[in-house]
Length: 193
Ligand code: URA
Image 1 (cartoon, protein in one colour):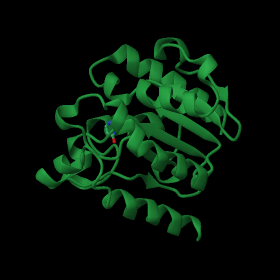
Image 2 (cartoon, rainbow, N blue to C red; image 1 turned 180 degrees about the vertical axis):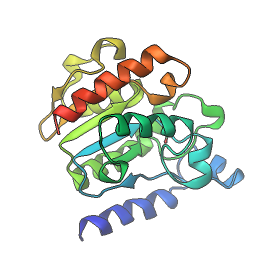
Image 3 (tube, rainbow, N blue to C red; image 1 turned 90 degrees about the horizontal axis):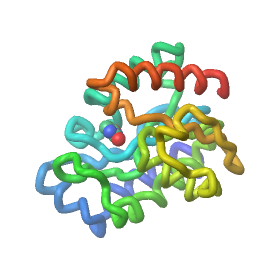
Image 4 (spheres, protein in one colour; image 1 turned 90 degrees about the vertical axis):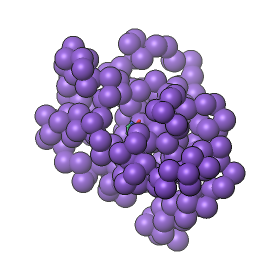
C-alpha cells in the first residue's frame, strides 16, 4: 500500500470506529470525525487536541477560530499550510469542548501513531499540553516532561523526528502575550525544517 492508501485506510477505520466513547455523540450531532489534512509527505506535522464544533461539522482540522490563529502563525514565518500536515490526537469532538478523557486518548492515539509512521515528518509540533504529553511519553521523551510553560519553544530529539512543544493556538485568541510567544516559537520551528 502506498502512503495515500494507508492514510485512507486510517480514515475508513476511524469512520467505522463504533467502539469509541465519542461515536454516539458523532451520530447524534451528525458530526464528522476529523482525521487530518495536508501534505502526505510533510516535513512538519502539527498535532492538536480534538476537533471543536466547526471541525466536527466539516471534518477538517483547525478550520475555526483556533485554525485562523494557526494560519496567521504559519503565514508569519512563510510556511504554507498546504505543505504541512495537521491533525489531532482525538479524532471526534468531545461534547461541550471539554478536555479529552484518558480512555478517549487511548482509543484514538494508535491512529495518530500510524499517521506519524506513514508521513515520517522531520518535526512533530504539538499544540497544547495533551498532545505534548502524549507525544513525549510515547516517543521516549518522558524524562524531559514538564509544564508547557517550561517546554514550549524547546526542541527535543526523539528517535525519528524532532518534537517542538507549542502552546495551543486557541489559548492565544484573547491573549496577545501568548500570541507573541507563539510567533517567537514558530520562528524556532522555521529554523529546524
Ligand atoms: N482545537 C484542536 O485541538 N483541534 C482542532 O482541530 C481545532 C481546535
